[in-house]
Image (cartoon, rainbow, N blue to C red):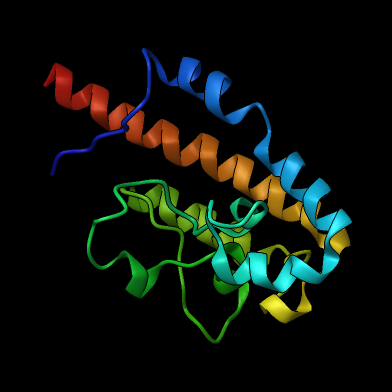
Length: 149
């Protein structure tokens, strides 16, 4: 399997600082606070096609063309919902199990999109930042291992 993190200049830390710490999540919260009627739509879209979709992106950061992910992964709301049996998609079983367990146990996360309130959005931002950091670091570590191995 070849892992590619396109657009990652240099190290993981440089990529993280340059692209992620501009805080698209804070901008998304600001947008939804001004447009609360779009909250459910943003949750449904869950990607960059909506100004706040990044808050609800799926819990994985890999190749979007990788098959099978849609059958097991979901956003943190899906993972938190005990009826859906969704997981964080990570290459490491240890990381996957730990993050999935922590999301399932986080009672601040609503279990359905129609239950999300504006006041819940900081929790979504917190989790997306954490997923960015941990899952992208895993991908970078795997990529470095391929280059060195």
